[in-house]
Image (cartoon, rainbow, N blue to C red; front, side):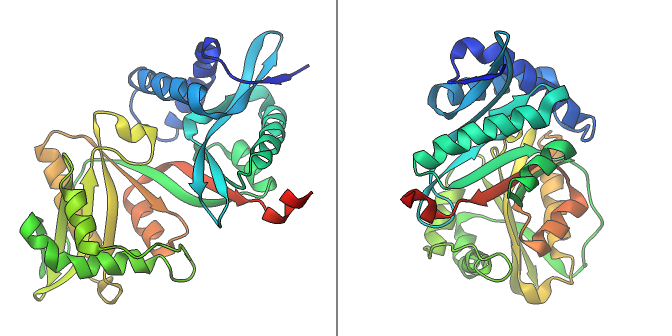
Length: 318
């Protein structure tokens, strides 16, 4: 009989073993992912933190950990109620009873989360686990985001009239309008992300002031038409590996998207990564952004997806 208990640091090794099996399986589909022996210390550190500060349960059978599911509390994700995010290292189980164990873990956890008023639920999972993907879809979750990775390599040449430059602080005022357009773009159909208004120039200055943050912009016939930026860490735990730099923002004017501007920007970033002996490039993106998703998946291979569900807040009355 399976018991569902609060996790303890003494359970870390068994939990880590289950997680590493999941990672090794995903790496059979995405071979460019970092070596498991290099990722294990990162997974251990992040999982230890989650055990200490997260909200979730482990599944115990015959004194062995056969599964676990732990998330961390967030502010409002969708709507006005707080939420919970289960990261990719926040869940795993023995493979031969996956549906049974995940069903028990989610049922117990969802009850706990809703009692705490956490009504937006997000789960990050390895992209090629079809059995688990089907489990979440059957439980009302839908795909929203993805993390993807590529070898650092040069892409096809862009349009010859496109000029790509690495941005300095003095360039940022002329990029502010484009950055604002990027922020507003996500409010449109079918994305409908209610991004708050921001001071675009201040946001760019604050971002570029951080260590090892770099931005490139593209111009066409003297008009600034796109930008792309990278920094050491993205949304995924894999982005923390020392061999990976991560694209964390990109935008091209909608009227200029037939000029291969995104490819030209990406090519310049790949050249810079090569020069700096960085061999992997990662990106996280909203899969509900259809245009962006098509571009990224042309150049990168997804290895995690984020699935979300919003619980109807009226349930709190009962």
